[in-house]
Image (cartoon, rainbow, N blue to C red; front, top):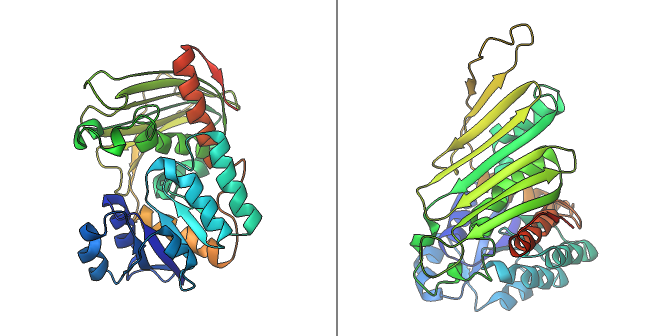
Length: 336
């Protein structure tokens, strides 16, 4: 049983606690640190969390094995490095860093100090996405040719002017850090690393805050192409579609935290003129937040790595950096 401290008790930090508290044999939260303790005392008491005076106290506490970070994006790298130096396993909400160098520094620090690093890309724990990965591996999809995704919603309207989520330095690339990086991580899981991006990003809906309309074209190292759009001033929607030489798949809905259905349409080479109808596959209900935290805890208990230097979480940050460069240059940029 990994004993963890939650750092940041906003909406998402509380959601992470609820996902495992009292129902997991791999991880439980024993303490909490937050910048606004008065707002969180009732929640902490209800869930049996000791309130700590700050992050340093969590790192110094011998009864804490791991820290789970639900903090602003720009804080992740330094907090991860500090945890590694203190010998604490660390799970960070995405993104790992806001550029490739900071993400790599975080991953390298954990590798150097022999602690496990996890990052909150919970889509990988969706049974539907894991089924797609198997369909690629066994040849059902054929060669992956193209991927399309979007992840949109009214995020720009949810926070008042001056909130950190309106700070372009905390959320570069509009909806990318809050939403788009999830789609990118799913694409990396299914199609591998990306070598080139052409992006555009604008603030159209409000006269303050970060960009609200961002889109990009992608070129994967495998030769596959892709598209991603994220709009944070529109009603909620998300979708991921993968086109293969033998079949296509699609997932998508309004709510993304439930267990997804999977739509599959397979080519019949003997009846190419017949328009095939897709088949919908359903899966047993699961909590992806619980699954990702338990996966992290099991690896931490065995002192095995999850996020590694140069891996997908670092590449995701490199892509974010390339997106910003492409927007600034108004042209294609190679991903480091």
